[in-house]
Every structure is written in structure tokens, then in C-alpha cells.
Amino acid sequence: VDFNLCLKNTCDENPKDKAFMKQYNGNLAIKSCKWLKRRPEDLKMKYCNKKAGAAGFEPAGAVCPSTCCLCEETDDDVFLKKMSVGTDGSVMLEKKTCSWLQTLPADKVEFHCGKTAASFVGGLPPAAAACPQTCGCSE
Image (tube, rainbow, N blue to C red; front, side):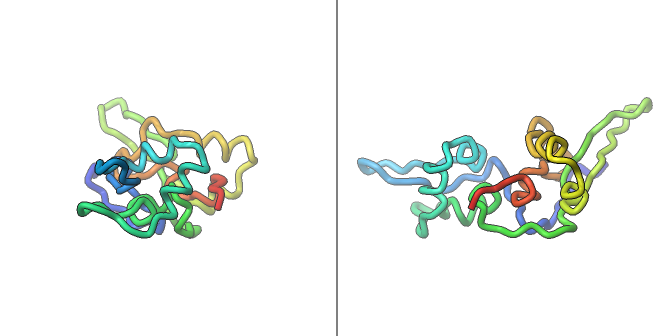
């Protein structure tokens, strides 16, 4: 398994990447996409709608396009469905596409969209990052 795999999904973002959120009392708030994803929707959109960055950090919309609902997934964007370890100790990654996810019943879509524990193993994003519209990204 190539753990340095570099995918080029339309909605790629790294949860550890940092973006400018706000400036207050002369201090800058620089936070990660993961932090932003966990904020209430109204606060998330406030930061996502900022157009300018500061101190060399880009605004959230530029750094976290999936979290900010600013990208359009394509049917062939891929995500990590499952990771397993073979009897020989090898790691096997099962990837699926957004079009595959769209064919599932709502409860299965919700299950896959809610998985984040093994995110970005082997360079594969979780379903919510690769397929934001299918996973219910509000715009």
C-alpha cells in the first residue's frame, strides 16, 4: 500500500491545514479544517465566507473547500471505504466513488459519511470530504 498516494479529488482538503479565521484585539485566530468542520453551521459559514487571509494564511474557503461547501464533487471522486489487515500483515484499502455512494440507501450513506476515524489512510479522504454534496453539505 502506498501511504503517500496523492489523490486529486475535486474536493480535496487536509484536515490539518490551517486557515485564517479572524483577528481580535490584535491577535490572529488560525485554525485547522478539522476544527472548522466541528463548529456550528452559522459560525462555520461566517469563517468560510471571509475573502481575505492574514499573516500568510489563506481564508478558510480557500484552504477547506469541502468543509465550506465550496467545491462540486464529481462521480469519480474516491474515498476510503474500508481498511483491513491481511493475514500476512499487509494493509488493504478499499476505495469507492461518490457515484457508488449515491446508490446506497440513506442509512448507509449516513454511515459512510459519518466515518472519520481512519481518515486519509493511504491518502484517501473520508466520504464526507470527497463527496460533500452526497453527504449533505449544506450550502
